[in-house]
Image 1 (tube, rainbow, N blue to C red):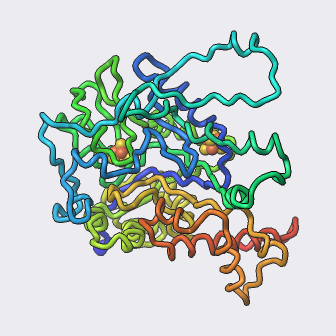
Image 2: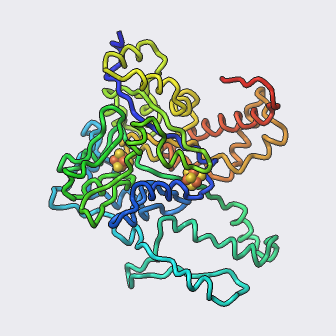
Image 3: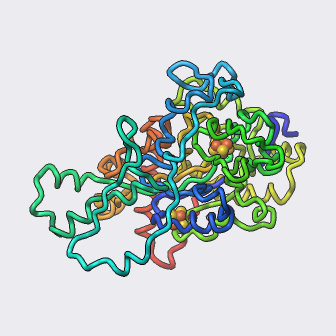
Length: 434
Ligand code: SF4
Ligand code: SF4
């Protein structure tokens, strides 16, 4: 029984619905209050919320060329696929040059409330310019955990000229085409974690029972290879303790049957938690597919259907606990990722097989569809409406599908159809679960 299924393992995973994130940062604050409200951890945000498009936190973490020192690179500057998808360290333990600096994070400051109260009244908006702490070639603006959120200049324009009438045609076009959305981030608790592969002390490990990636604080020797090795830059160095720290997926809460603190306190209720069953023998093969375009299907292929009798037999054979199998069967994460195919992984081209996925943003709502409703006999009209979305498909593809716009279009198409369908449903109508 279950002979066709490889080694079955269970993994906690998260799906975040980006259309629902309001950028309130409650998740970051409650996470910090729970986990990193300690000396040496001031700049550490296990959960952070980025404004996209933007440079992220630490600044420029998506610029993988910058971090190349930590990894053996294959063709076109990618991780070496000849290693069979296993992530190999290039640097020796004497050479670990590609670490983000404090300048890429930020230096925590204390707000001067005194000045807020005593400053003279003014008609204009505050217009503090970003200041450089560096000079010459290295001159850069100071930076914060979500600096891009604070940079918006539109408020000042709009206050002076609410209808934007005084603006040139070019500036007006820029306003009309502007887009942004929020991207909350935690550690991805990857199936093929490069932080674990890079640790010379064996302190980073992935738990057998639930896939949560942790740092053994007693074994950590502060080499920081995990920091340079994680492409998402989600391991931090505590300069007081001299040890690495990272998101724990709130494992003590998970063990007690509770959600992570970021999920529980999320104002937008956008974080879905669940258990995925996957074929551990298939992970490295999926991570090593040659063509980036095959990554999405490859990663989907390792997730197992928790209702399939062969999978259930394999889960039993491999000792997966019964309540975990039941959790996998109820999992909204499985439904969103594999059954309905409306969630996508963040930067799958890093090939660590991330396990925090995202329902991409559809906003602003497409007038064309909602004015006249969704006609199932005319899917092309829905598709045309998707094409007119303000957030460019290419941008989303760059984040979630290694550039494959066809996969993003498919997801947006399903989301648009579902939204239009639900808007046509009257209160009390039976809901079609399919
Ligand atoms: Fe490790 Fe980074 Fe993946 Fe988290 S996101 S498991 S720290 S490689
Ligand atoms: Fe977004 Fe929820 Fe975090 Fe608020 S708490 S920023 S809605 S993910």
